Structure formats: structure tokens, C-alpha cells
Image (cartoon, rainbow, N blue to C red; front, side, top):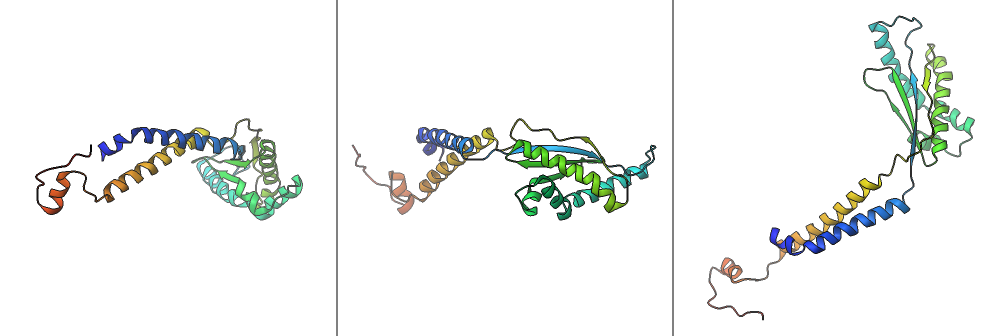
Length: 210
């Protein structure tokens, strides 16, 4: 198998180049770039300035509850109305990602959109609405927005480098797989040893091809 693949090394390298070039061109010209903006909130579990372990635990639990409330239809529908977005709740919730770093009361609201300015505006509006509405839902202290979302300058996806490597690898693997399958399924007699293996007899002569 190794010798057979080595005989086709030029074709394999060509597949590597073609696959990478094709994936690069597709990613560069046909895939819409997506931008991610993130707003961060600090969840306050108590009005007291002194924070003990029980307050930290309560704050962590509240953070988990807030993640569900922020992505609720009531909350995001208010965001759609205020920003006059031409979208539905189902589409908007698919753009929103909530993240709570382990062991903290930090809640990060990330929004991904093809328009970087829109991504930042939506993230900031969600944080604003959360600060207004969450105390009404929980009868507790309003969370603090300590880091507003900024307009991202670089696209978060797609990764041109990653897609180029995957395209090159994919086409190369497919071609090598085709060669291996073809080689293993080939039952024609190529050498005299093939006849010996199949029939148990050794040919006494071989007529050369040339």
C-alpha cells in the first residue's frame, strides 16, 4: 500500500493543493463573515458590601437563573421592539450565547451577527434590558453592566486558515481512500506470485509486456 501511494505522490500533492485552494476561495468569497460582540455583567447577590461564602453561593445560583431569564421570549422581544429589528425571537435567540466563567458571578452576553455594529448594539441592549427587567422578575438587586460590548473589528468566523487546511486534508484523504479501495479490490493477475497464491502453481515462464 505504501509503495502504491508513493507511485501516486504527485496526484496526492495535487489534491492537497486543489483542496486547500478550493476551500480558501469558498471561505473567502462565498461564506458570510460573522462578528461577535460581548457585554459583561456582574451579578450582585446581596445588598451588603461584605461578601461571605453564602452570598457567593447565592450569587452563583442567581447567575444560572439569569441566563435562562435573559434568553426568554419576553426579554428578547423587548430588545427586538426597542431596536426595531427585522427578525423573530427564534432567530435572535440563536445569535445569543450566555457564558458564566466557573466560580464567578460574571455573566457574559455574546451576540453574533454579520453586521459588527448590530452585534454590539444587540449585546448592549440585552444587557440594558436585563438590568431593568431582572429585578422585577427576582425582586432582587439589579445586576451591574461593568463592560459594554464594543464593535468587533475582526470576524469571529469563519476561520480561513482552518477551512483551508480542512479542505486540503479532506480531498487528499478522499483520493487516498479511493486509491486504497481500488488497490484492495483489484483481483487481476499482475505478477507470477499472484498466480501462485491463487492456484498454488508456479508459472514456468513470463511473457514481458514490452
